Image (cartoon, rainbow, N blue to C red):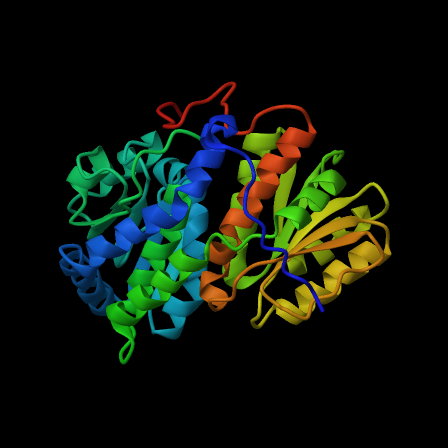
Length: 358
């Protein structure tokens, strides 16, 4: 059986980077958002639900994290009869597509250049739902319905805004589910806020040593967990300066699997859910062929294998919330890999927190 070694961080606050401090702040940021939607924010959620039910179609649009996060609710919305898809805001801006239904624009700053320009272009042409952390931002002002992340200030790689975006998308889905609804979602997310500190720090350290020499890292998932894989690939490039790519399990099997050998490094997200068995089998096979693999999973019976496969256990809150349960673990793994490579994660060399240039 997999053991969950749930240790406290023994680093004092003065030693922590901005990135690590913001990881620690995620539970409080999530509780802050939940309090908002228990009160004055509920009306906006209900307005979103009414528009989605009326139009039966939603296009999620953003850049980077803001695009990836919507992966957690696409299958769930389709199951509720809502035709849901995502698109890169930059591609939508320069290669427009017809939007029939609701346009949900996501930008934590509300000022990302591509998303802002899409909002300006589409104002009055489609109902705009603005998911943002800044009510006074361009996106906040242009949105017909404003859904606030309430994550507080964030300076380093996306952590608090990532978690709160995932949670907000979960609330949006549950606002459409009869018999459960917003109150049920708030309760589940409250449990998540209480359990986010459950991380296997010893296992994260072992996994980081196995990944720190990587020429590249492949992040592999299926279904809602693709939000975690795509976020991890983006942030590992940003925070560890390691080339990375995210693949669905099926896409990785169709070609990239030929790269698997002693030099290969991978992270596989294995949730309890429809794609979990296939992902588990792939992770074991990769390790048997020599790859060093870190498995992030909420399956309590997943076994480590032969020193090549390191299992990192996370809490289980259902497949749609698996990316949220995995968030702190993948973020701390990123930080640990950066430290193994000799530098601090979260310091930008060429970019900045808000991308204002295309």
